[in-house]
Length: 122
Image (cartoon, rainbow, N blue to C red):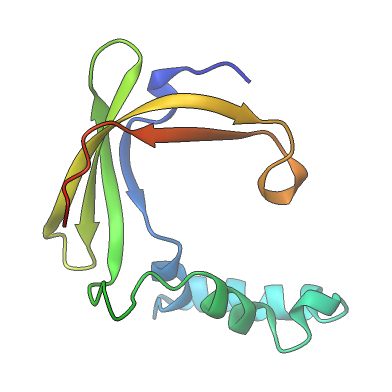
């Protein structure tokens, strides 16, 4: 996996927004997914229920739901990620650099591991 900064730039949505969407097309997609995933053991309680448990961004220490993030260049090989609440309000930003690539990360595929350089204490 080669790092190409332009592959990462732009506004990204948090996956949670797809779980809570009231858009009829998204709801239809979830109905279709439930049918396809029903035979898989990890989805024994339903595909949507699995992802709702796995993709929670709130906690006691972080009560704001993550809405997404905006990624802009921060030099030739770094990224600035501004984290956004579900209402679009900024939650903070940090500069990240590619630390390494995990050969078998999420879903057994190559995954880029970024490290923050200037994270605020809060």
